[in-house]
Length: 447
Image 1: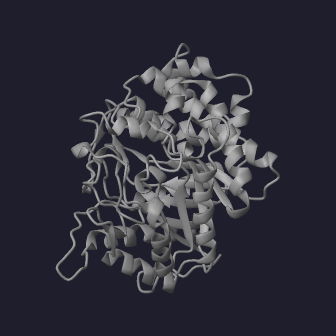
Image 2: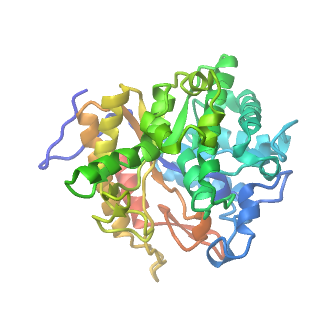
Image 3: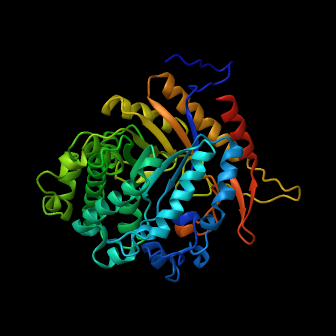
């Protein structure tokens, strides 16, 4: 593939490049108690005082459940070619098992039909953190049975909606569930239990493998793969200690997921660090890694920030941060990440399913939102992605996080990540300057 590149000329992406944007169900849908939807762990977590900023919940979110047609028109008007969204498990199976809720399936049929009518290719995620609360009560992801229940749910969704979905993503960011849900506890289910956390990692990946098998069993020709948030890990200095610490840090951040999914093994240094009596190591059964590493059709990559590791295993800041204090803005990390995956794991088709940042957006008197920082961020990261393509990375598409301002988990509604501004009091949508810029990029095939 020959792609023109150079500082003097425009950057042009492949003609069939999938320009897109992304959302997730709990963050946008609202309608938390409508049409048979059950409780999720995020419903429970967000209602505990002190868990979320301002006590915010996703009960209403941005009311996408009722306003999806308006949002579909926004996508069409932006020229999106791809829309990555998630399906709410408790909307399909209110208790996580059993007969599916037809009203929930019908909502996603309407959404999918609307995407196809507007010429937008759907990319559907099966699990974006909203585990049915009934399954959490039965052990959640610490229970191996939850992985089997996920396989049943996946089979229901594949058979009901599969003819409308050309690409499926299984588990969104298992690492975030592990780290934020079970190590720091600032995401649902709000635990701080390192030994449980890595057993959860194993069961999430087992659930992915079961879902791949479920899709193959239907005879579908749809594509399927996982969605991983990956962080390039760099030594914070030139010392051997920092190099060694960064290598182990990389095992927890990246290789725990990449090696198991794409090579069929867990990193030896990570297993040694956890120890043979850890719940994760004890929980691995014969055949599990074969299930986890069943061939996939694509890998969804989510990149937000690098990590710089000090000799004592701590972390350091090297670059300016966004409003999200954990996010260092380093576009080169995207290039490093994409080329590393291709170099170490082979030419698996890649898609960027999340990349973006929050900015202090306000609606001006002239009804515009000036978010130059987001435009700069996206331009620099797309430039890094373009360079990766030019260097042989099979990157097929790019999805901005996020299409719309929404419920940002423990941060509530304080952080705005969208291309589209949402006035939460009225639910009015307003294109930000970044949305107008992105529309031009899509129309031109680059910038």
